Each structure stands twice: as C-alpha cells, then as structure tokens.
Length: 119
Image 1 (tube, helix red, strand yellow):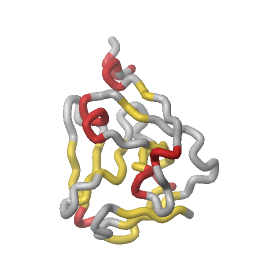
Image 2: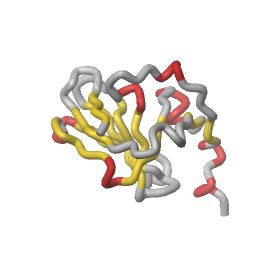
Image 3: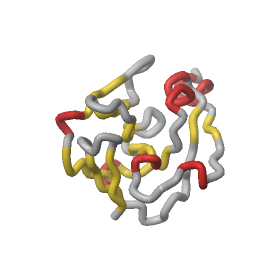
Image 4: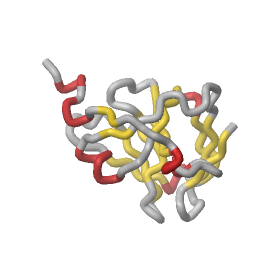
C-alpha cells in the first residue's frame, strides 16, 4: 500500500500499485499540459481517500466525462477518473510518499487527439 497526500496534507489517500509504476504517462491535452503531472492508472477500488474527501474539488471540462480532483485548500491535483476508461483513476505520482517524478522517463499520451473524440 502506498500513501499519498496533497501539499497541505488535508487530502490523504492510499493506493495499491501491485505492478508498481508499469504504465506511467503524461498527457498533452489542454488540462494536463498545464499541470504537467505524471500519472499512473489504477482501478477505482485501488484508491482510497483516507482523510479530507470533503476538501476535494471536482473540475470537469469539454465532454465532462473525466473527473479531475484537487485539494480545495492548496490546489494540488491528486487524481482523476479517466475519460478513456471511467473504471480507472489516474493518480498524480508526485503526491506519493518518497516519489521524485523527475526520476522517471515518461512517454506523453496524445490527449489533444483523444480516441473518444474520433467519430
């Protein structure tokens, strides 16, 4: 079990990563490119908010399928429910204890041309 939190420690969570960091990505969509986070997808039941769920703010844009969560106190993005797979969250690995995101070489996902936008 990995523990994580926002910057001010108001929002705390635990996440199970049985396969470690096996699918890290960055995204180049309008939202992700501005926040610059590295994300690891996990099943919905792998993430548990252990403290501060009432402090989480929800932000949605465009199709309003993805659900982006931020601490309403410090503004740190902790996780989001994925648009491409609503049965998964992506967690911000920078929020995990002991993780230094710059230690990872991470590919970029093409969110500007998202598969859900293709007709």
